[in-house]
Length: 451
Ligand SMILES: Cc1cc2nc3c(=O)[nH]c(=O)nc-3n(C[C@H](O)[C@H](O)[C@H](O)COP(=O)(O)OP(=O)(O)OC[C@H]3O[C@@H](n4cnc5c(N)ncnc54)[C@H](O)[C@@H]3O)c2cc1C
Image (cartoon, rainbow, N blue to C red; front, side, top):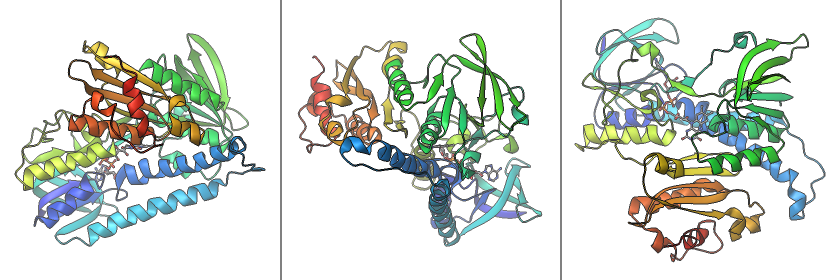
């Protein structure tokens, strides 16, 4: 049994920085990873998808360049190069992360799968063969999440794709059926549509992006439809079947009517679930300081449930580290949860939306500004979407925002800073912003608000 001061299970977005900081603080630290350093974000999530979003955007820009007076005769997607560029960026990040761990004093990296065998003891099935038993007073679980595979008849018999396996494609599928029109499904659907696949999206809910306001969901639906993406809502996938020619037949119920959709590939994008089974963690939640019901055992990032984003996992690390090593008393209560969907245009979100306000019976005012009224958007040639903010008329504070538009994530971040700094909307109306930036239009957004 090897003894450490601290053990981290999973080299993800919380685990890697935490392991380095604990080791630098003098703790004999072990980090265990069953696959790749960097976790989902680096290897199967943010990094690879956003490099592909960039390739897809280049294709889209080429397709509409004539409008800007640039005639591109033709363009072709070289999916092998698209994949190679992505692989190079991922590998650089993964290897950089691994080197940084290996170069840190007091820190050991072991590749293998960890399971709890006792309260504070772990068995590691080493990737290179054999096992190892380890123990520590402090254990941090950072095992992330994995794709949720729904129970659908015949699904196991077709070679379906997930958000992870689709990243191995070095060709463009002829017809991709995307099950799930939420953040992940939308990013992949639009990007493969731009690479040249025919795209059909199936969404079980009454609308796409069911957690967003209806106007946002409708606008995004229209944006994708304008790119020839076929979207069905109120659509339940009943069964899959392989055809003799190697294609796939999907039996679906759309608004109660059964239909058959033929496609070449299926992407399952209905959500992700915490990866906690091997750890026997199912019944253990965390408190607001991320400690489980066992003292000294913490869970950070996606595995604990709740908002599954890289910046949340990273913030979990800073909270736990500062509490343990710097003597702080921080919690995850009331922390902001910004996020961005990297479709084109992006959807940047922070705080409550209009529907949250209704549900919570909060008296708010809602203000909108179409991107068609944003000088920068007109000049760039992309006026799709709108900005929207939810404010408290009594305090003039901004309670939430949704920015569906080019650089929506960046514009949302400006509003987040205002929210965090308590800058009220009546001040933003008259802030001097550089012209013509997108954020300059925040003046006009709040001038649209009647006092
Ligand atoms: C397609 C896709 C796109 C995404 N895009 C974004 C985005 O644009 N922005 C954003 O903020 N978030 C995005 N996310 C979410 C983001 O990737 C995750 O929220 C983030 O990686 C969570 O980090 P984590 O530290 O909780 O876990 P992870 O990064 O998932 O790391 C967990 C690690 O633990 C390892 N592990 C698991 N079990 C064991 C075990 N028993 N023993 C040893 N090791 C183990 C895993 O192999 C993994 O490396 C995306 C996710 C996906 C799937």
